[in-house]
Length: 86
Image 1 (cartoon, rainbow, N blue to C red):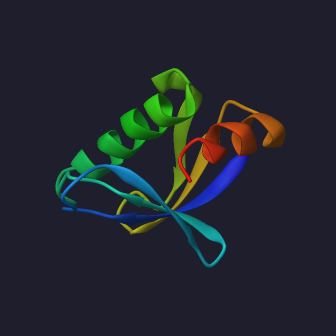
Image 2: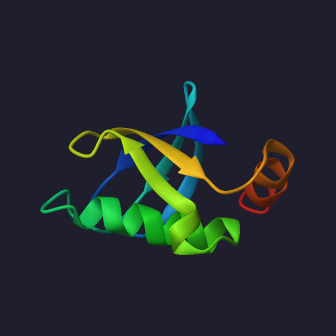
């Protein structure tokens, strides 16, 4: 499934903050430099949602705060995994 993500770089901690309009808002400690925030987003979403890093793919928005991420899970599994963070 694909999910729109709004990234907040240079946060005090990595966290899923909830919904920002239609996008999932994710805070990351990594700076938005040289792809560090993209790598951190991939690693954090994989860990937070119980996926392997290879199952989290950045489809769009490599240089933007607004990203489109492909997750190797279906809607029901995503909803269940996300419910553990709120």
